[in-house]
Amino acid sequence: MSDRTPCEKLMNMETVCQAFKNNQPAISDRIISCFYACYRLLFIKWAKITYQRYPEDMIEFAANNSFTDGVMKLRESAGRDELYQSSASVKTVLFHFCRNLLLGHLTSEKRLAEKKQKLAPFIAGEITGNAVEAEGTVEEDRCRNLARALEKMPAADRQIIRWRHLEGKSNDEIARLLAITVASATNRIYRCMQRLRELVDDMENENH
Image 1 (tube, rainbow, N blue to C red):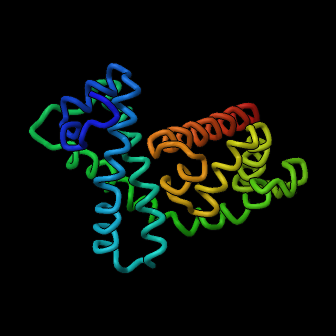
Image 2: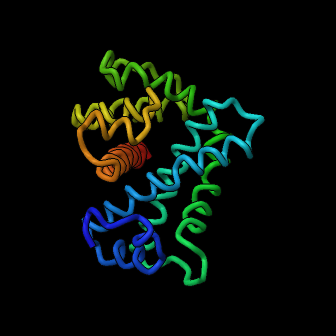
């Protein structure tokens, strides 16, 4: 299979599981691109219909995040050979992961918005972690750790986090800005956030 293999030939459970389990980058990247090309807008449309009580922009943001997380969860599960064997299609399994993540994203949107507001100046590089005033709360401590963790990350990674989690740019938009494929952009976003979480966890462990 090549990077020109039609999506319909890749979207079967056996091919997906083998590509991720055996760490085949060329096929894996193509599969992720197909996920976005074939299913992302469909999932967002479903989310808007199902959760009409939420503002449309909130649903779209949460659905985009849920879809990205769902793709990564499917990839990790397949890589560990943990996907259940059944007659379910790849689309069904992917949407199962995405749906399970969506409500959590929606219900925490207010908290995330507040955190993004606090983190905005840190990601923008306007002030440093040392300038954060601690008020003795868990939230303030975590905010301070996030600021310091961001300082330790390369500027390119901070820019990606800014685009994705402050400006709400889609993976497609970030891919165009970086002149790379959507699959590669998805992987970079995932790695950036994973590294940020690791840095914050290390700092919180040190504090305890």
